[in-house]
Structure formats: C-alpha cells, structure tokens
Image (cartoon, rainbow, N blue to C red; front, side):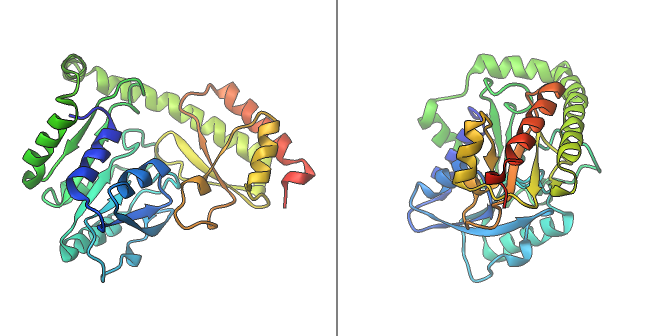
Amino acid sequence: MTSGATQGLSLIAKLLLSPGDEVIIEDPITHEIQTIFSSPGSSLYPIPVDHNGMRTELLPHDKKPSFVFVTPSHQFPIGGTLTIQRRIQLIQFARQSNCYIVEDDYDSEFRYKGSPISSLQGLDPSRVIYIGTFSKILSPALRLGYLVLPPSLVEKCKNLKWFTDLHTSSLEQLTLANFIEDRYLEHHISKMKKVYKKRREALKQSLNREFGDEVKIFGDSTGLHLIASFENVIFSEQVLKKLDQHKIKIYPVELHTIEKGVHKNKIILGYGNLAEKEIEEGIRRLKAALSAKALTL
C-alpha cells in the first residue's frame, strides 16, 4: 500500500533509476510524471500516442531502458485505450530489451463503452509493475494507492517504503478494507459511473451544440475527461491570457508534451466534479470567448 499513486511513482523512480538511465514514456504525459522520472538524473525517450495509446511500432530496439511507462486504460491526456495488439507488442519489446513495464492503471474503473481489456500486469506479472489508486474512485483527499510488483522487487520496495514514511495510515487501510469487503466500493463505482456518464454526455452535447464541425471529440470512452480538438484555434500563450481575462481557465494538451508543437489545438476538459448545468454554462462561455476575432486563426 502507498500514500497515493504519486508516492508509488516516486518509489519506482528511487527503486529503478540512476543518473544516466533512460525511461521510454508516452508523449504527452503529465508534467508531474515527467518530473518524477527525470529527477534522478535519468532521461526521457518520448513515444507519440494516438487514439489507441502508445504507438508501439515506434519503440526503439536499439535502446536499453530501465522501464517503459504507459497509461494503457485511459492514456492521459489524449485518452486512448491501448489495444490488445499493442499490449502484446509492448510486452515483447520489454522481454527483448530486458526491462520492466510500469503500468499506471489511470481511470480504468470508469469505462463507458466496450469490454474491459486485460491489464498488462495480468499478461506478464514478472515484467510489469502495476500502479493503482483509490483517490480517483473515492476522493482526492484519500491518499491511498497500491503497487503490484514482480516478486523480485517486493522486498526492495517494502524496505524503501519503510524508509520513506514507515507505512501508510493503518486506520485508513482498515476502513477501506471493510468498505471493499462489504461491497460498498463496488456499489459506489457502479453508482458513480452512471453519474459521470450523464456529465460526459452533457459535455459532448454542449460542445457539439456550440461548436458543431469546428471541434472533434475523442478520448471519451473511459475516465473523467475528454479531449476537444479545434479546427481554427491555437491555444497560444496570448489566447490563454485573453481567455483568462474572460475568467475562463483551460488546460491545453501542450502543457504535458515533451515534443512541443503537435497538440497546440487541443484542450483537456474534465467533468468529474461539475454539475450538468455548470458544464453547459462553461462551454457557452468558452464559445463566446473563442468567437472573439483576436482568439481565432
């Protein structure tokens, strides 16, 4: 057990990385994860993603990375789900390169379309480190996560965790264990999926109503956010400042890219903590602001 997914990521970095090591990583990916994995003095080798996750055909066979990092259930931020064919390709690459795969199972609980896909960890338990968290399911204030490790790494990670903070709150762990055992967690996820699905539909309908063919929506089959790609808007610093003057705060995909310039027309739109009326009002205000001549191409 860890004190959230961030601690899990930090433990992995301390466990596996040294100065000069290399990490193969999805691009884009959250800036925080980039910082965690580069802080030991290691370098990041970015692999582009598309609507089906990491483009595994671009994996470099001349590299010897410490590990490959992926968010296969709902790639953040682009939102793709890694196909089973690409999962197999990734595992084959890890075996050939003799490296680990770090699987951040981001947003997997809230899947709205299609059947669940097997985790990478389930396909190769000796090669994959699996990161999970309860913060997204229950509350960000609940800092509880977990790692599923290959047997060869368990003792080393337990010792590292002990030196970091002794242990994660026993009271919170016991409370959560009872919550799971009594099936409250299962019921909670089922209930929240229905709530989030309605909010997701409200967001998609609002975007289509206000922008029509000017926007493309993707990455919406799972999770609590989607991507809006605009035909005629580049979210430059100037545009962001003007939106800020309209009291509109948005999150461009470019904030999370390693190779810059590819995703300048895309923004991340989350809906997990917003009521449907708030979503509709927010998109109306965004449309009004972007309709200003100074904000369009």
